[in-house]
Length: 175
View 1 (tube, one colour):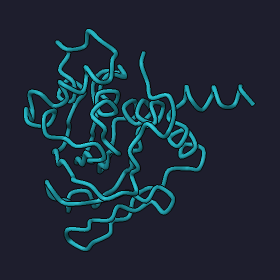
View 2: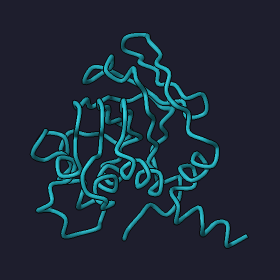
View 3: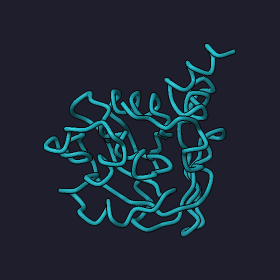
View 4: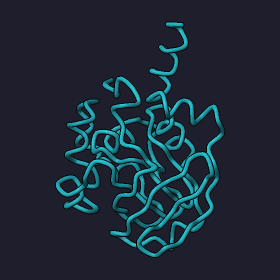
């Protein structure tokens, strides 16, 4: 599987960017339709991200943009292709009211920041937001609002900062 080689390959979630808002119960087949799961290349998968749900996403998403959703984001299969497609698309992070646990874990393992934020439903499509992983907040610059989120434990932040579990482990072994 192809993954970013280091954290510098990832956009900075503390930089404000556009929010792409989705609803509740967005499953992995809506993130990456199963008919396109013939590759593990993040760039290839990114071209099909949300293809059936929001066809404009893959052509219009900019590096650094955010995905925002309601309850139960990433339910469905346990495959890593869905968070990998978002990594390939250059998404800075995902903010949702709740996540399917396997998606949450896969995202962290791939270095994709995710925050559980009950206030995510106040964010509108196109709002400019950023994440503060240390403080556990999401800032909405468009509305001049701030939403509390569940801060990632320091260990999980370390995984994300290193670019995911593979890069984290390699760095530990290379010491």
